[in-house]
Length: 287
Ligand code: 3HC
Figure 1 (spheres, rainbow, N blue to C red):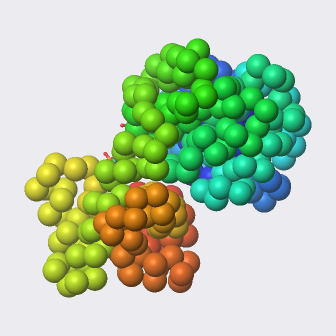
Figure 2: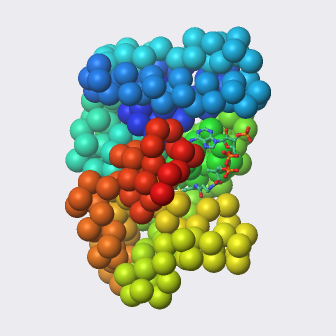
């Protein structure tokens, strides 16, 4: 049995991935409101698959039936693996891992879906650093095929191997990476996204021109502003902060327009407005 703590966009997607692979999942949120939002993510995502003819109603019910939602972390005591997908704030993650270390049986593997924070720092908060690992999914988790498996200097090799095998069972392609800020994907992707925002700020081209140029000129599925809105501007901003702190490389210093939007609470799809405007579910782009 697998636990997922945090049922925002990523956590709910990760819970769905496990349940689709036939695993029983316990999804944990902090309070009933957050739990209801998590349930909403799961119902919309699987409902959309039914609408597109990718799942039958029965299959959707089976997938949702494998996921138990709760506000009690204590329900994770018998989990074999717990993946945390709470906000990218080190203090929150450290305190959660301390809690999970106390609650879960000694063999439980604790995985963090952190985008850029130090897995080593999170592992060191526990009495089982050898059984703590990074398991980094990509947004939207049910669709994106990569998992970055992050081992630290103290992660037991068998834990890295187990998470790698599990990722394959989930239908993903795992790559093993070291514990440096941003791992591989975000270390390369975030400076590019940031630079797009710098160019927008400079007035080199408009939002849609830059998005279209990168989609059609490079064959990317989304332009940088559509992707920033998907990732969440707050998340992108936080990752850039971590990258900048670790590298002091100016390419990672967040563009002023990004800071402006985050400060204004325009975080992308999750709040209905970011670089673009949205109504309703991701994909319902209106402006
Ligand atoms: N949840 C579940 N499924 C979704 C979804 C969502 N939010 N969004 C799209 N899908 C599914 C659709 O149902 C569809 O499934 P099907 O092929 O089985 O019918 C499939 O994805 C394709 O969707 P659409 O036809 O609606 O749209 P597109 O073909 O434009 O694909 C996309 C949408 C998959 C999001 C594509 O645009 C894409 O790959 N974009 C790039 C995403 C990306 O780069 N993600 C990584 C971000 S970095 C990151 O996550 C790291 C983190 O640490 C910040």
